[in-house]
Image (cartoon, rainbow, N blue to C red; front, side, top):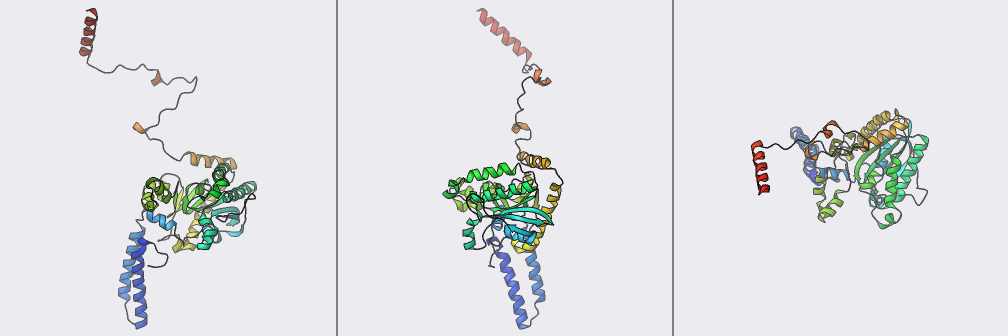
Length: 366
């Protein structure tokens, strides 16, 4: 199978290899196999459409985790100009699992922040596989507060399985760091656009995800817990992650239907790693379009817009037996007309009721 291919892509790669071998053989021997090659190319395109037009949640999860998928730094280099990376949280250390700094988007100064996975084993170890410690979240918070102070829009790229789960992170206040990011991001008076470019897992993702607009790449996933973690908890078996992914509604299409994300950004067939430059251009266009809308709002409107976005997520009921109860009446509030009506007696047969009453009187007389 072609390097970097996933298991469900195996038939595609086998057919592509066959086409390449036939073309090479024809060139070496001087034969004309153009008709056969054209037939195989048509067969390949048909198979490609069949495979990528009906991807399951589990297959999208594997594409989102692909080791060749563009990272935050890849998108920063392709989308922004004049990027200056800033380091450290000014409290403990510089967490390489989160990168951020100053840049320009179409000439507009912005602050850009994101999770950063490694490109190889050594890089992944240095960056904790994109899972931040508290100092990473505090670095992000420092940069966001700086952006708020100078009126720069904030753009975040989300790509993590979750916050680092080790005891060192807990000792340094992992939960507090995430919670503080949620609190402060909800009050910032500048536009915030968040883009889920790969895997958005748990609080580690949400700590960079409280934005006015949340966008997702077509094959990205976003969930309260990774499918592996959910499988470990539910079935004590992390190998059932694919099964968990199907049940958790974690795809961009699911979340767009739920109103959690505003836009799904298309990907090339096979995923963003098939055409990183083209994917970066699609992300640039979407981010800029939403940013222009947000920059027209006042600081007060931005805060209110962000509040209403997250306040509207989720549905309690839509009528019938599942509808929520009416809210309690405030003190001194007059009753509604229907509340003042006397309850009507249950319907019944008048003759039967009269007979029952006569029997009761006769029994008491005896």
